[in-house]
Image (cartoon, rainbow, N blue to C red; front, side, top):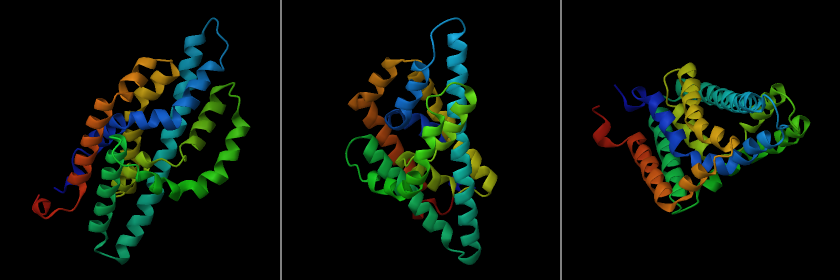
Length: 229
């Protein structure tokens, strides 16, 4: 069985979990602002939870949609070029390694990759203003769905890996598990749990996460000694 077929979903979850510090920088502010906009009073915690779940649900749904689009494109290309799989593996592995280098604060080359999605975000970002300030879960869901298209190296790294999955559905599900991995930190930020931010801001923690992401990248590369597995 090829490496991309086993442990795919748990590994995607772990990538999201390890990369949560990056997510806090990209999406943590908007997640925290949803809570701050709610009036404090009876039922506050329930409203806060529903708002955060709606926002993150929209965000993760967008990840799955993007993965399905990428998987459809790669599958179509694979029909025309049978040697595409090693190329996709190389791209996915390289992206994960770049993300690991960024996470460990050794090199920020992943920022060049993030520019790929800038034109799409330029068109979508004005739409987010229609749902601000957020007063109900429907607005939070729509805002999250738009926010899921924010250019992000961690998302692109995992998308490259998701494109290796055998079906469009499994590619989308891979990104769902990735999104679930980012969920604990995003919810904690919404609940104003600053200690998580402080923990992930520590150099040792970030570097450990960076090393693990780099190892994921190396594991994904089509290396000769993996050919028989």
